[in-house]
Image 1 (cartoon, rainbow, N blue to C red):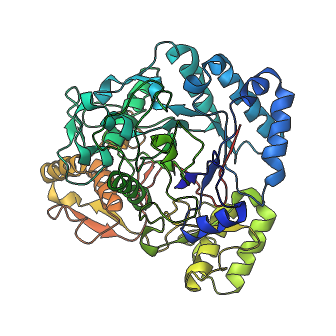
Image 2 (cartoon, rainbow, N blue to C red):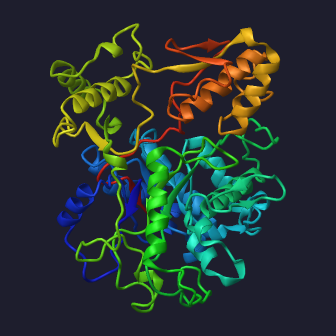
Image 3 (cartoon, rainbow, N blue to C red):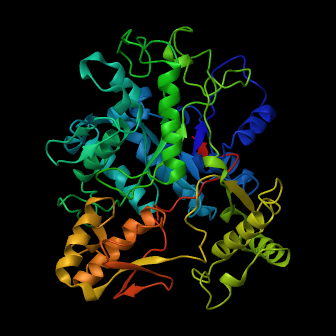
Length: 525
């Protein structure tokens, strides 16, 4: 979870003040965008891409934690003349990172405006614009898949809500709970937020190019996500109207009060709460992750066509650093300390040794212990520095380790829980009761994709094996809360990791791999 730090203004505070502002408000990830004009040169000449990577990425590592390079921004809309060279530019930047040994930790992507999805409702009809679908998006998705990167889509539900022709419910648009929702008539999937409908429309568009999941859900729809989505921009303006020449180019906004402080506050806080709680899935992909960067840090007075243009009013803060409205990035006060992969094994070992020698409980990462696997410096260091940080009461300065660690306010997947528990099925109750409970779990939030035919946990093809996977998924997704592993007496909690055939039951509701970072995440080309 982070923000876009835009600087199209003449009244913003100095950089050091901004860094303090970010830290004080629990904002640990930042995107700093640069012009699209560099894309053509990066595509034309690999050496130019290499020089840029060295000067804008490599020289700042590992002191600054960078995990991604954004090649351009909304190129299809802002610089359509660069459309056909964009993927080559991305490949050249990746090659430059690979030459420096950085390609595993620094991923390459490009932020794409949602207008690239030509049809977005119902979500199952989602498809990319015909002029870019096979010629640009297909090779881009191939590249992202091969390099382990994500498809970066900018989602702004505000624009759909602002169009009177759409007649969209306000609570649905801003993601308020208990709204009526919208059902996809083709799939029967129910959507409780416009953002999720847009995300799934993009997943369906990807599927139409051959990038569907490897498994199916109970409706026969693709469940796995071979290329994950990230959200480099999403926001809601607090005042103003959409003007000609604005973000969508030609739409003139209504006077229906879509851009208000109340709407912006509701949308942003709902978004923050979802990400920090880990409840980031969609109806199509319940276990999908969602890395989000809110647009924007400040109101920027040189954007758009005047103070009543929404383009000047997306900020969380006014230029004087007071909040436009209340929000909280701290996730209810919880925080964790995570090791920084970019510093290398030698510095990770030093941090690990210090933590274990100065109060961290490192017994769980000893050989044969609960959290020894995965046996990597990064995993062990994350466990140790977090133990030290928690034992010191999360006091300021207790998660630094000479730059080898950082604080995150979103529960990290990479830190093992030595007190983990699992929910498994009781074979003695019989197949009929197991099937009833299995159906209930799969219909109430469990991710049952991995137990579909051909998926990784389909075998052994038994009721007790499938029910155990479904029960445990439901239990972990509900944070192992009391009462979430009963299923009318068909399940029980165990404290030893169960293995069913070749399938290991996860010990928590695992999101797609992602590493939150601090003081910088995307270098932008």
